[in-house]
Amino acid sequence: MNSLLHLPADARPREKLLARGAGALADAELLALLLRTGLPGQGVLQLAQALLERFGGIAGLLQADVAALAAVKGLGPAKRAELAAVLELARRALLQQMVERPVFDSPNRVKDYLALQMRHLGHEVFAVLFVDSQHRLLAFEILFRGSLTQTSVHPREIVKRALALNAAAVVLAHNHPSGVAEPSRADEFLTQSLRASLALVDVRVLDHLVVGGTSVLSFAERGLL
Image (tube, rainbow, N blue to C red; front, top):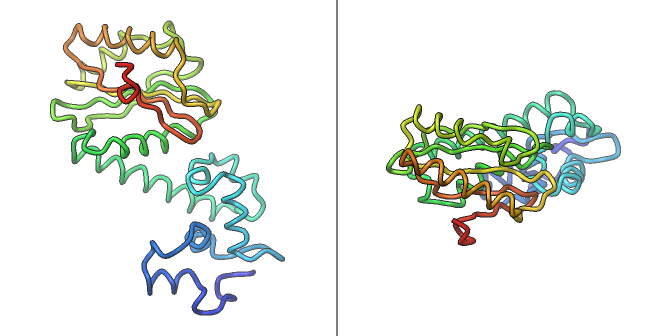
C-alpha cells in the first residue's frame, strides 16, 4: 500500500515529528501522516505532494470542498473525513481565540479565520462579525448569499442582528470567488451605505474584509473607511 512503514526509520514523518517537533516537517510530510497510505505505484509522500500541487498548497487543500476531494483518486471517505476534521478543528481554534481575546489584538487571525470560512466557496457571500465594546467576538454570521449588490445586502437585517446581539461594532466581510481580492466601486459604495445605517444605532464598522483566492484585503488598511 506504499505506506509510511516502507520508509527508512529516520525518514518517517511520525518519528521525525516525535523527535524534532511538528515544525520540522515539510507540508507533504504532515499531510502524509494524515493519509497514511498511498496508491499502487505512488507512495504516500508522493500522493501528499501531488495533492498539495493540485490544490495550491496546504491552505488550498484544507479549503477544498467535499466534491473536489471526492474527485481525487486515492481519497476515500475516511481520508476525506480526516481532512475535513482538520479544517474544522482549525476553524474552531481560531474562533475560540477570537472569542477569548479582542478581535483586533491580531488582525491576521481574523483574516485567517475568514479565509478558512469563505475562500473555498464558489458563490459570493456577505458575512458579519459582531463584536462587543471590548472588540471580543459575539457571533460570526453569513447573512446574504448570491450576487452581492446594494439591493441584495439589506442594511436593515444587519442592524437588526447587531441590536439583537447587543453588538458595539461589526467587521464586514465578503468573498470574491474570482480569486481577486481587489474591492470594486460597488463594494466601496456598499460599505459606506452600511456604515451610515449602523451609525444610526451607534454601531461602528471597524473594517470590511474582502477574501480572495490568495489574500484578504482590509478596507481599514487601505484607508477606505
